[in-house]
Length: 328
Image (cartoon, rainbow, N blue to C red; front, side, top):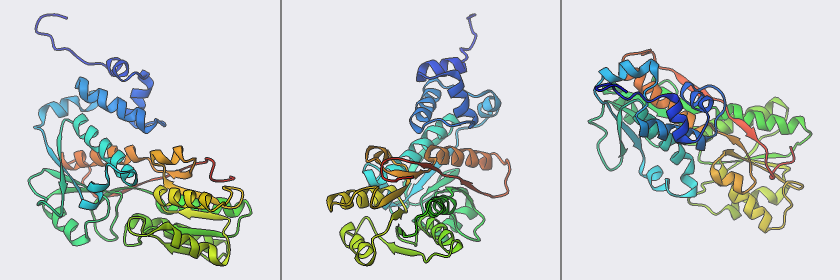
């Protein structure tokens, strides 16, 4: 290298630093093809540590002052981040913070019940705890992207998983394979994600002339024993479709404790594919959690730089991961 010449970090350097192939780095940066969330995070950390700038955005990024992104969440979500129940949001948050750095922006976490949502160039609002009026007030004065949330009629950008399609798909799959007694155990329907998944279940059951049977369960404040006793009291189901993995794992453990053979007697399906799902052998619908974080940052960056300003809802399909808790 000649004197005064800048050291240019290449994609090969990123691949070597992350311990992956060049093709894998390319897939992560260009959002093409499947890459596991662990590998994706390794690549993004390598990008940040080496200060690698993808060619397309390098000149633009160099001209811009660092923009501050507020990552807004509720106290409930913040307190869950270090617990198994909060792994879903923890993975999304890691992806957001890593990708903010990749776009040469900075970020700060904001717990909206404890501090004012102000002083940032734009905001990524994580989860569905903030009400419509609060979100609308922020969106009037700042650029906003919602993650894992959507509000009917509010023209704010949203990035979320397609819970309706995922639960419709798995319910239909069991029906197509001859299963009739399918129960849906869902979280509180005041949250959009649970409501979306519940609606998918009901639609699939009604499409096939079956009566939907669903029970609400608050996994934070309610024992799974009582809920399961209600489900098992009248007619033992062939399948229990749960609206997240935490609920499903609670169900799985309790059924096994009570002597039920899984999946021979009862199939159990989760939603999200948190790390514990694999350890427990739980079949589940995988949400592309890192993808949610990456796309939210990309979208906010576009808004902050006056690109493609018309708001849109970006809904990512889930994929079914079969493990030991289901026959099919």
